[in-house]
Image (cartoon, rainbow, N blue to C red; front, top):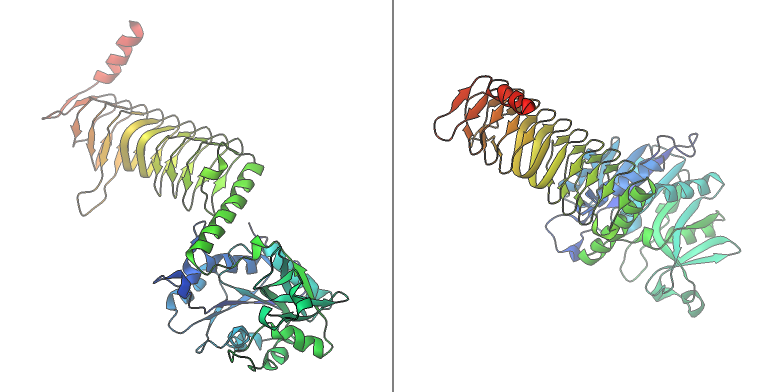
Length: 453
């Protein structure tokens, strides 16, 4: 979760998000920032980090024709301005594409990349704190056991004086283990002055954001570096790196769930989404997948090989094994959803049981009702979805088909193998193995006779 209060409320902040890269190595028809980690686009992860760091507005820089990226940015955050980098001429050139946003005047400007889904908002706050302490520029770095290929952070007496690319580094500079991660914070009062001083006098004829450090140092401005863990600042350029980022995020989410009081028997086999909410004393068995929009309340049990998406599971409920909860599934306290059961857009009320081999869609199952094996709510006629309403305490015999729209009254009894096409009165018996026959009061009398006997 991100906080609602900025670390430096007196200071204004613009977040600049660079999302103009082509992502050729992803080999995808979809733009790289739209690929997902833990159910959320990398672009959304980056915007979330900026929100947590206290950014008030967001300048998202995209490439030509990147309408889908722009739409995702607007969907994920308010106060987004889209800027197009018409020519890809380097990272400083990309930031200058957002000149109109920068010119409005800010205390702090954060510049990050849309392919870094693991970056924490706390880390970006640390960069802003560096500006608040008087630096004109604060770069983010990391220490690497093997820094080969990375730009090095060149420091003198605690001050950052340059970021040197591997090919340009001296032998002494190549021995430096502190590397450039990419994101940085720059004083809003100095940003345009420094960006406009960047030159393209390099082999690629591009304008590099890393040159800001040396320009600032040459003008007597203070520049410093803050460090993060190497994993946190990893960038995603291909599917292999995307899988690594997913694995890292899953480790983070699983740890959070367990530290919050849930038991994951085999954590490495459980997959969570960024918005998964798991209460205390929840037990999650191996090989469970949580899609977007799932809430599990205290004390529920999710058995092995279950898949949940857009579902709410109340305390004390039991799900699975091999269950599927689709969007709109609302499972009440102490209800049971068993093996090979699919629930979609349906409420299963307190204590109700759907124990095996059933499909319940667009339905309500009342408190304490029992749904026998092989029961299907026939909710779709090829054109319209219709609802099945099953009353409290009803008993649906095995291998029954309930053809919606249909109401099964409280306490009613549906005989096994029935195809129910008409409403069943409360406490009635419905046997529809051909022609349906309703027997008023049968279910009530049957229960009373069992109690007496």
